[in-house]
Length: 222
Image 1: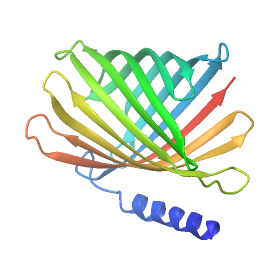
Image 2 (image 1 turned 45 degrees about the horizontal axis):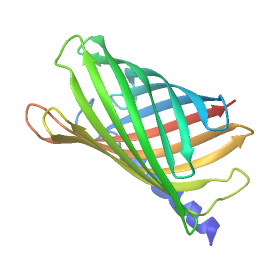
Image 3 (image 1 turned 90 degrees about the horizontal axis):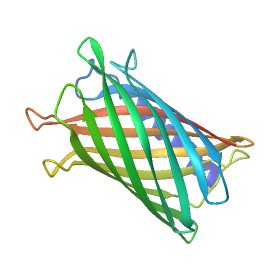
């Protein structure tokens, strides 16, 4: 039964990715996002977290975004994590990459229920730009990890949804819907592959644009 479910999930992913091709940065563009994370345990509750991410658009043919992130995460107890950090962003605007400076803080609530792992991350960001007005952004990411694990890699399916709200305008301007598979690669190296439907609202027309994203994550813990 479990093998049949796993095969079905992979088949769904293949169909979604194949349908993602479109014109450059138009509605339904296909993109690839790669995220690499390093976690360094300072003590039983505190860890330092470093992250770098790269995104390719125009049907995954052009690098248009990268960020570098450093922060701290503190496990208050089994149900609550808090932390914060700084993210430096380079994003292509026209022909040039422009920068964003983004200090941030987060609070994550988490629990387990009948084998399901639930988490609710609340993140507040101050977005500083040299080329446009600074803004505050709130992000809420709710994740459900299913109780089943498959093969020796401990492949575990999950679903997630994240909203982005521009607090200056009180406006919901992005939503990310995920379906993914987490896995243990070897030792302290873990991986994650996901499909994300990334919906964003244009600032000038208020129309929603969808992007199909294939995401690949690697995380190494020291």
